[in-house]
Image 1 (cartoon, helix red, strand yellow):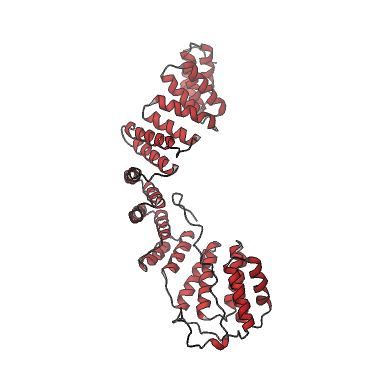
Image 2: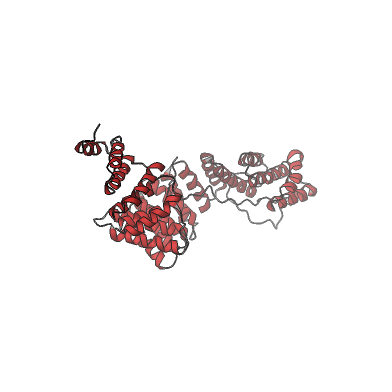
Length: 429
């Protein structure tokens, strides 16, 4: 199953983990004050309750309160004996669901699922409690990455409980997405959104991701832009919109969104500045003249760095250097590359700086930087040696030039050109 790299998905649904059961004494089950049923149309026959002990009722209440207060030790101390030895199956089931929540809070999903299934399988819960716990079980399965059981459970909950909620369809859509069943995920999320006038913003993440994975980039971009229009000050909405527009290769539209956000003073983090700079470079490379777009990239990066928002990192200095290089601003490019060099894991920035210095006939400095880059490691070693040869030639260092060309001749990328030069100089071996 794939994940969409441009959209950060939730690890699972947000679970309502407060225990949902309040023990009911069997003799009170026909009280006129009984609250309205949550599942009035359920197909499940309401079981006869067997809890008759007020002492057990009080203990369960205390145990469940401890669960809700995340007092693990007290909850286990009270509920475990009831789960193990109460004469009432109803009391046992209530204790089991409380213990299941304790284990979930501890991150032990397998035990939580096992205990919750035991509580449900006892078959003694009133319908309201039974179906709420069944819904919780579907959530637990999703959190434990058991996506098909989650779908099966929520479908059973709807069929037998005769109840539909937007949240249940959103949960189902989330599970379908993670199974790679994108059409089903799209249908479920759209169903959830159609059932409420206040859909959860996170549902759009699943919808956008499902559209993107199924090759429907235009639809994903449309959803992203709608979400941003509804939440113009939400940085996550902006990030999602830009991400899906980039994935759909709608770069001008992505730039328009980011420029508006920038103009409105909403650039608050490094990612905003860096993403806009990268967008400028991408669009610049696809035009006949990259200089104007590259100059905008330089400006936005410098602004972010001057504000202290864009970090002084290798990647950012290298990006600034590349942008300035494309903008034909060699002095800014060299300065950026020099700042990147001590932070670098390889020699690429050093070689690029040396290449620009060659253009200004600064051969000594260029030679030192190019050699430093070669020693640190570069991807195109032959090209680096060709540049080193050029620096040596500018310094009238013929032995150094020949030595560098001989190294370049050993690289398949530059072998032919280097050997031709060596032969012309009568220096070929």
